[in-house]
Image (tube, rainbow, N blue to C red; front, side):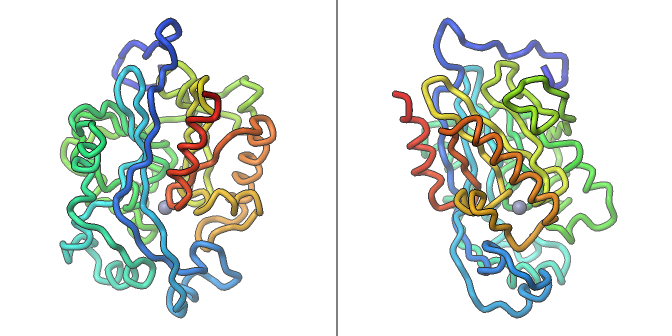
Length: 301
Ligand SMILES: [Zn+2]
């Protein structure tokens, strides 16, 4: 069991059926980003941030996996306070830049506890949340789940030890909050031929149903989660590795991140897709996410 605190591994529900009952796409509002941000640009990031006038919509999604041993979140979306609290981003330059990178459309109804309640779950019941990475639009719900283990890759967590993580939109004020039970984790070597491209992985529940794979590039410690249930097509939640699944197929890189490392992660995911031809790849900011998850979870029924 990779998850600390000396707990026994969550066992697979082999006799009782699949370990995962459902996978849902949850929304914490939507936003607009520059065309160059979503689809890439030859220009340096600062250039398009300051000069671009093209805006495209993006959904701000996260995911609920109803595992037989308790519900698990993959990311937690955006905190609606960002729209109402003028000091949500503490640095003036950060506030100025945010307006030039995103236009955010979020209301109090998009709060994590309310969104969970709307689909019949309680924030109190979330046992584990896994984070694709630490950008503010993925960690915004953690105040509602103080009882949950918050799993992040150790490499991503290491950014908080650097002088100015906020320059990369890792906002310490909203991550290192009281009661947040962060558990930075290291990946472990794997001999699973299916996943060997990734070198090392992490089995969240100890039953193979939620495998974490390192897919850096968007940020240094970004990870993806392979969600498996024998009754479905496999689903790969990729966070912000790409903004649309089709862009990964076409090799179109987004306008931010380390291009070389992104290319390497793209190649690994594409090789995984060759091995699992029915895999459904689901980025956090893809408008097709809900439809694609529905397709995957009905695939083998
Ligand atoms: Zn991000």
